[in-house]
Length: 137
Image (cartoon, rainbow, N blue to C red):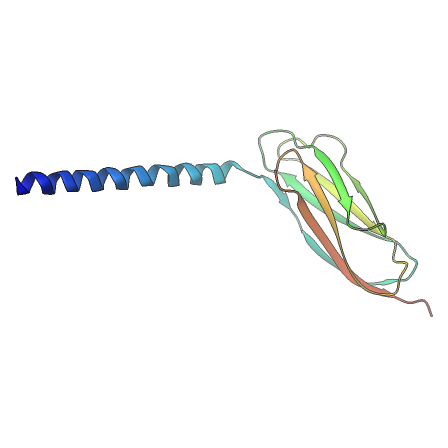
């Protein structure tokens, strides 16, 4: 009788261990297949730029997914920055770009961002750039 109880306990523990392994394996597989855009740089330091001279910062990415990627929205954080981006679908293995043009009107340091939304990722990507605008003499 004691041997049967020990066997049942061992069997129960074995089944519980087996059932907790499967969800972990499924999550690992899920993580491996999500995302797929690889950005050359997500944050760029432009250094010093002269006041009144617009500066264009280009972010490049590669589509490492198995489907076409479309940029659906690009939103600069302020009115001092204009944005441009690849408007056509980016095929698997190809590259696309997002350009941010900062107007450099005010002297001093700056730290700005551009938020990019695509059909490949649920969470928008926030790209940043910083530098210092040098006042005209």
